[in-house]
Image (cartoon, rainbow, N blue to C red):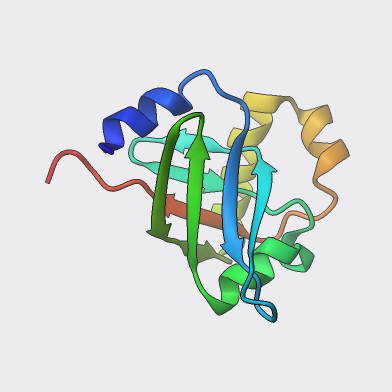
Length: 122
């Protein structure tokens, strides 16, 4: 699958699915999540920050599968703990989903996850 297909599948979507491996069980768990797309990078906010189950799993094994419709990509991720970057990403989430929604669904915003989709420019 090309990155272009995934990016096309992401356009106009408000939700994607991520699949992570359980830290203890080793089983795969899939979660629907909100996201923002900037250039060739997806940003995710764990709803309960560092207390979020799938975020804890990523700390152990920083790889996940992203799925949008029929398109899926498995890739390594970067965990963002720099508060100014997290705040900037949260701001983009507010622009996309609305401040009240973000306030309602994200009680703790102290980390974010960067998912590189791989650039078509290289």
